[in-house]
Image 1 (cartoon, rainbow, N blue to C red):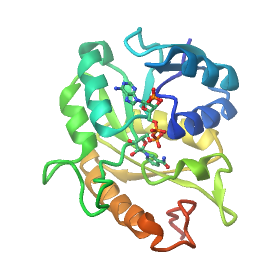
Image 2 (image 1 turned 120 degrees about the vertical axis):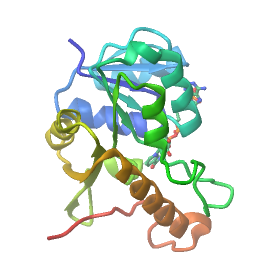
Image 3 (image 1 turned 60 degrees about the horizontal axis):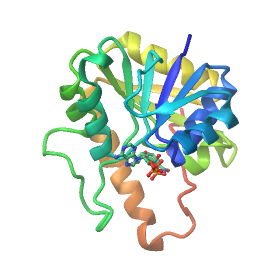
Length: 210
Ligand SMILES: NC(=O)c1ccc[n+]([C@@H]2O[C@H](COP(=O)([O-])OP(=O)(O)OC[C@H]3O[C@@H](n4cnc5c(N)ncnc54)[C@H](OP(=O)(O)O)[C@@H]3O)[C@@H](O)[C@H]2O)c1
């Protein structure tokens, strides 16, 4: 039985697949590029396929950009009923790093949830840079993965995967908290865009310390 389906083969897909493999999870990789899917799958002992094929995992990570994630959610529609969708995207205008590309008073996660009402969306991983996921820590601190969602069961399932992979899951509340998670990462990305703060170099992490 497959635990986690990851859609995409880019930076985040590869990093999350590596984490899932380290947690001993059974993984399916789906991509529009069958060769890329097979390559990533072979590194992580996963099965591979192309986007559009049946999704096997009960947790589905959309490791794609916002517009693509919406297309994929719309494409699968009711086939996602009952599944937990992990939305990792940062809907940031990367021309300016000055605004989000979601409607005011909403978030990418809520927009995706509206497309698949029979599934449960959890916002997660958007505040963690792919470059830091391989090590699982920054400056000796375990990475925090902030999770927002309306279903306690869905968040618990994602948190279990996060914790088992050596990271620390932090439940930040209902899905509408995705607005703050996305806005916060706009701020973090803006700090680093244009090499404004070269000391961070896309290798920084957001950490909650007691
Ligand atoms: N990179 C980070 O540090 C980071 C951190 C937090 C959150 N995020 C978020 O994670 C998401 C992915 O970022 P990334 O850095 O991993 O991007 P990326 O390396 O560019 O990977 C994007 C993936 O989406 C696939 N894709 C593009 N268009 C597609 C389509 N029409 N249909 C199906 N698949 C398509 C790409 O496939 P091809 O290779 O075939 O183009 C690729 O596998 C984004 O939403 C980003 O905001 C990124």
